[in-house]
Length: 211
Image 1 (spheres, helix red, strand yellow):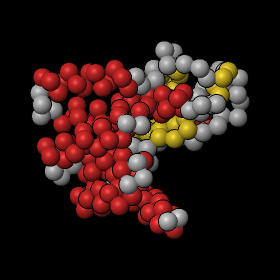
Image 2 (tube, rainbow, N blue to C red):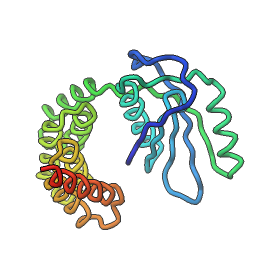
Image 3 (cartoon, rainbow, N blue to C red):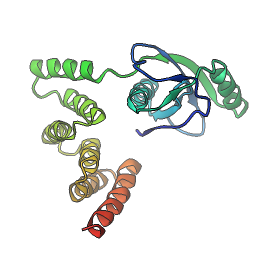
């Protein structure tokens, strides 16, 4: 699932490390839509997930990414969660407060490496480690792990899509388009892959125009 960062408009504390803290987040479930939205107003980011667990994992990634962005500001508006909850509940949504720590990608990589050492065919561990590498900007390593997932589970649309993301972030737009296409052939309704393919075509056009 996708996540994004946004300016809170209430800068108070400049980010330094911040990764050892726990951050309060708001889970939102709308009965008309599947899955959960999740917001962290202190950092100014939001994400979503098909399940509660996935939504919390995604916001942990988003918070870590935001804290790594130079110049980002933290907000100390402690009433933001309560105001957001009241607004969503007034619209008929269910809300839940939770706390999460930012994702620790080095720990995730180490844990996945240990899991792979125990079971070299652990596709989930390769997928998770690939995600950590992708978040760290180590795109070549992410590509290797996603390629391993594809060798283990050839019809895994998500692995193709994520490998496409790694190629896209490396400026390898032709390879990204091929992977997004492979993902969509396995799941024609995969909106993240569709959005990625559109962005990759734009990137490819701009790349060729500049030559």
